[in-house]
Length: 156
Image (tube, rainbow, N blue to C red; front, side, top):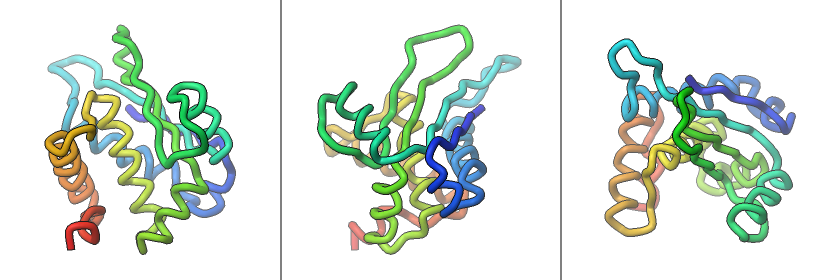
């Protein structure tokens, strides 16, 4: 289960269905990568749609990097509830990137939620091999949602 909270009203103003979009993208990752075990409860995650300032504060506090970034993931320690962790997205950065990349904000939000939840599941992109594997998963998950390849322009 994916719980989504809107902290910055800019998300709701720009995308009235932002909660549904984020839930659907996060759940698609969980369904494809970490489905519930037989009779067990499926893992869950929390997504916070917030401001650049809030993400900048988290980025500084936990990564010791200045300024906002598009998405941050905070994996949770193992717990009996199966909570994988939290994902935070900065509205201004995400909206600016979507515009610069010629993508709809809804598609970019779906991509970044999927990206963040994959991080919660232990995927990373520090090496070329890791990046290729993670991007392939992102493309597959987004395709299942009817969303075009977010990396197509980079490969062209």
